[in-house]
Image (cartoon, rainbow, N blue to C red; front, side, top):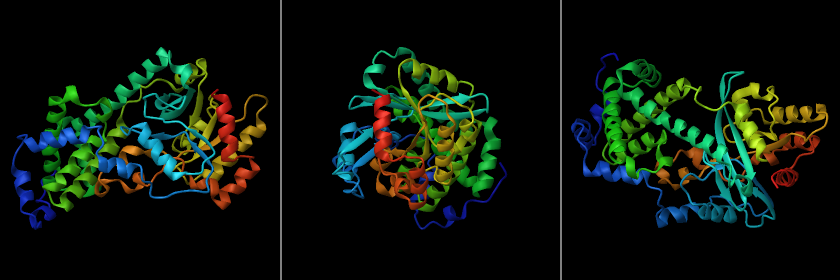
Length: 390
């Protein structure tokens, strides 16, 4: 790392307490332990519950709700459904299935999960949405073992993220991230100091840390908590730098330890599950792989650019199919409920703005033309997919 002058924002900050935090060394304080316990806690305060059950928008005219791609994270499902009830007070038909990352979860007789896997043919990590009748997965020991392995391996990315910041072996990644974000040496040292503290906190509190809290966003949440003691510009720049480091870690994360896509599909089909490919535009070759899936997600908040094109592609494939069930066209809101539980000041606005069952593309005038030609609407997809999961 090149030697650089102290970050100007740190020199000129009108907040004198920030200097004390930067220079206090690596000693853990009671404050550090309290903050760690708070950011890994899965308990909700009354204020959080009130916020979670009060949607920003209400859709009284929407009667059909399709929600087969969303993540409750640590938010209890009764709280989730209270929000859904408030969002769609007049719904008459729905298909609402949670899809935690690599953790099978059940709701109202159906179960779901979003699983990471690896397609060796085009050398990409892909994700699949798996949906089941709850009864079919009660004794699905092989699938549950596959998911447990994937969950544990996916969680190991946090430790590679931490190692990238602390270990000299990965200095080149820090250099790249610093160049991309304009991070001076003083800022990098500040980040290292507090990531080192976080690493020690994880090790000291391992026995009481929920497994679902071991993910990359733990670092983001810890640095957000530092805003109480450090000026806003420093923390904001640190978060930008950390996001760049995380992107490099994710790009280099070894895929060989994920299960093959075909292996996951084979196991799901053996127990009568349904399979939807989410945001396929992130790995285009999957459209040509001819996997045994039920359908494709043509829109979600992360994948909006090619919705009309994807509708037409799936429709064309259905017209060319000879026998067998047609491919379904679905949309997903990709809501992360944990983001809504955060203090609004620290939320990611894009993620926090997502709502379960809210998929505006269904009503977009241009996209609706293609959906009509493909004979697709929410009610028809809900009824068809329900019958497949029976």
